[in-house]
Image 1: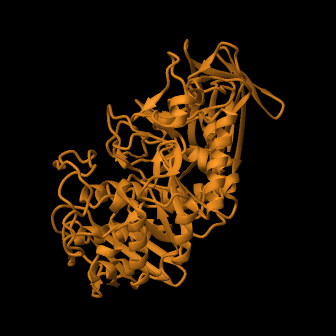
Image 2 (image 1 turned 135 degrees about the vertical axis):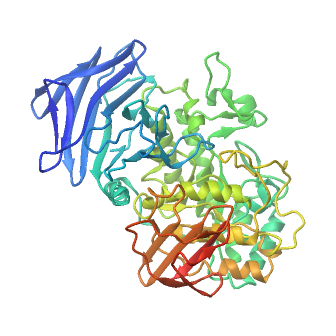
Image 3 (image 1 turned 180 degrees about the vertical axis):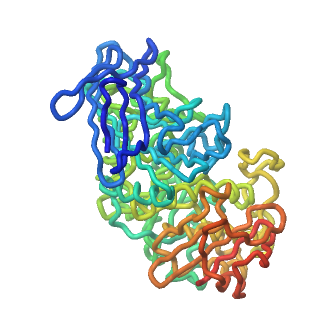
Length: 607
């Protein structure tokens, strides 16, 4: 239960017995500095101010969640940089943040920042987006997350002896704007994360069943041709994977340029012809598109520059050599509608939306419409795309912030790109474990592709497109680093993708795999319809024990993430089945310390 102490000007959360859960002050930051909220009771809520900002404060509880809603009135010349609750460490469920025995789930925005459950400690700052969980050595945990879908980016970070939970608008407000946070305290962080998923389900779109298919990207990259697509569809239909894969998606490589939706010379002159061939082969046609970027060498980039996001000097914002379409302009929204309605009319029913990354969205500071926040701009664009493709189409969000995609897309990527390198497996698995609670609550989760090509599964002399070889010396700098993965290492990755329980897309050249590779992919079916629980997520740096119970199917994944052999050591209090049959080898495996696992390996046990 929440209350506001007018004497201390603090928000206090207590349990039914009156014991303190957490305590916080509300802080607003602008160009003049930080302002602490000062309030008094008025009617059913609280009204007050933080420096020059007029603030409305609403406190409530729903189930296990404490909800804090803050309404901010605009100021004609004021820029609202940040708004957050500052939770005091060592109070209630908030652990001592300078102790290395305290842990925080961090999902930073930078793709190369370490993600997962990370140890805190003196001088260490960890940040997360959308939500976080902190756990102390005494076993008490607190979850802080977005309470409602808003207009601005969220931010959760440790700062000295406080946890800051809030938002960073970095803009001038044009209307009264509400920001909402949700908090829960308890002993089991996994239960709190799953409860958070059920709470957020009211905002979600969860009617679509997860899908399985094949995508051209990981093997072909931008070099894909329609001949390649024909060859791969024929290979699928001639293999045991036929009937298991329902969708086939053309990824990057089909278009003329960023911002030009005309097929290039490697594809039929009309998208309708490409979609028709995919459908005639027995698959639901899918297509990739990056709708935010625009090349300066297209008609729009050269002659319609008023449709692009300007920078502070009246030039155009450029990222990676591409400009950004200004989604706050009605004419650009009409372009989105026309592009995607044309793809829908052509026959495509699966749409992968890519490159709507947060760094690009943040760069849209000088967009035409400043009356709403950046996430609201993106959300409006995604709604237009949904309207264009129809309610029965399937949309995958690949990179857009969760706050702007929930309720619109059917699925969402939950990790970085996979490539056939152990470095990618090692980095992505840890991030995936932190998102498994989203499956069926926010959407269907997408762990990127299930890939298996290696010297043991293919004699392809070039299993990856051209890249510069480099050592894997820093664990966070994983991109195509170190040697390409072995078959056993990729079976570890297949175990992860199976246990994710969401969408499952293959992306090897099926035509180039041997029987061993095809057989390994076939063992991913039947698919789970529920995500596994990473049972030791807050115990081991990379969880070793993932348990899935989905109807009559029960699977236990046991991982060895290390570079040397390791016995199966169960953490104290973890109760698991004593044995199971490994899907990969067909051998019964005992879950005991006497069982020593090979380096970089996994068991997928059928229970």
